[in-house]
Length: 97
Image 1 (tube, one colour):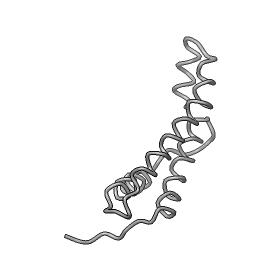
Image 2 (image 1 turned 90 degrees about the vertical axis):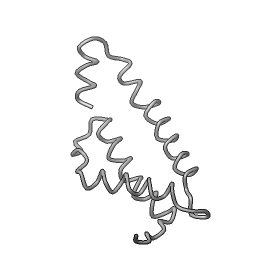
Image 3 (image 1 turned 120 degrees about the horizontal axis):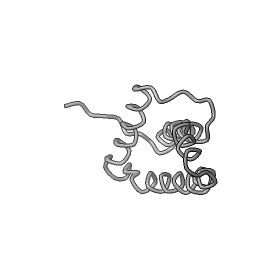
């Protein structure tokens, strides 16, 4: 079994922020390519490792706060644009995003 290196908060949040930015660009309809499998694995592994590290390097609460902040942004910015649409226009917008 190999020892993994600790991921410090700043380094981990930088990786996560890149993923969040890409996701938000996709949700807002900007021409952003989808996540590659490597990007997805890197993002998932970073979040998992940061939330399972032993104290004082356990950043589960900081990650929770970041995810809450991201969800609030999505609800405040993306959801209203979907709420303006109905029927087939709503379905098309969901498919587009």
